[in-house]
Image 1: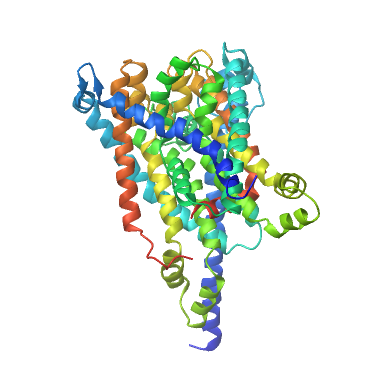
Image 2: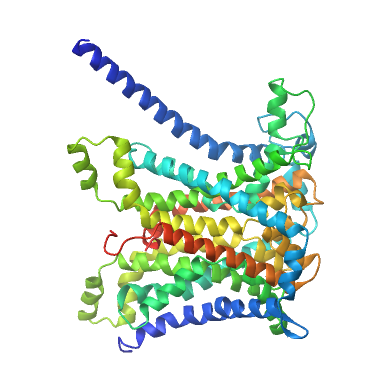
Length: 279
Length: 281
């Protein structure tokens, strides 16, 4: 064998390796996108088309299913409840979680390790199960079947993430910046609001959005804790047996849309927050 | 406020909150599960374990986890290594691959229902290819294999992203010098993967597996959307005890059983993938 053919062969294998690589990237992208696209087709089809066979693989851009969804008794209220609970979760988890994230990044204090353990335990715990005893507790306190009660449970789900994310955000800002502000006459509080806060605001927004998505998507606790004021996930779950297909698909699509936008908005922080969450 | 008190003031809200809504309900659920008219007893546990559906739902949950988690791990590792070498379009590809991270299990179940239901896209495709001439209702008790496959696919589709994100973050922490050194010594890509990436990735693998396995035992809405009552799982039975049978003692016992299984598997994973002291990055 001459040198030239050896070179050819290695180039050939490299080329086919490259092809295999690109093909699998494309395949994996299709694996994620195609099912969502199929749901989109169903959503943008008339109820008749959704229940007919065989299906077209191109949407007909008919808003019949979505209109049916909007007109279905209780659906819009459920959608509103979902948004309210998610917004409450978002505000509470950041308001409660961010100070702890700041404390973890800036101070060494006794019990720090214990506190971190509590956070990590809460993250790796099947928390929705705790909705069962909370249902009893909420009835005693009058919080049963309220958006606020459910938001409290969702906040428990979101807090470990809020703490870990804000911890990594604050750790990314050198303490020297704050110290410089103190020497220039800032108090601890004004140094924080004038120097640190503007720098981490985008990151805080990202973790707030993450909290929103956690609440928006949660099914089990929502179904256990709400009866009249159901959220969208709880409403869809409760009506799975009885609702027609086009209602399920339209509802499913409404559930997916915020996820698409939100993951896009937080994509830059996704890896930073999990990198830190590893330890 | 001085620097000795301030950190405690800052962590107080979280501690109170988690105490009230995480630790306290945990005590409550145990009280509910072990409680009965005549004080402490295992009656609730006996009741749920003796129910004919219990062994089936336990087996289904475990089987599903055993089928889904290894595939997800392999897939996430593959995707993470593919992304780490990517130069162009890395952000776009990562965005697409992490989309399912934001999608709820219920929505994922509904998405795969669109594919597997009787007038769904799988039937339409098979019909187009001429394999079948009239639609088959896949999601019935006559096709338990297809029901299992549909649920497993939906789970793999939905929850691989969370492992991917953890692993990509972990790979980013491995110093590039290790690979350069391996190149100098002529190690193949595969050898670099098994000798550098995998061992260095151990903490991330640990986190990813623990989170994923716990979530796998919590599977609920995907099953409800695709299998309904055809494929009973532990979490679904817990929900049924609470709502259909209005037996909150039994529901609490089920919750404790799921917790027990989760904790058991967490300990096993931590033990298998333990990071030797001083060897972490």
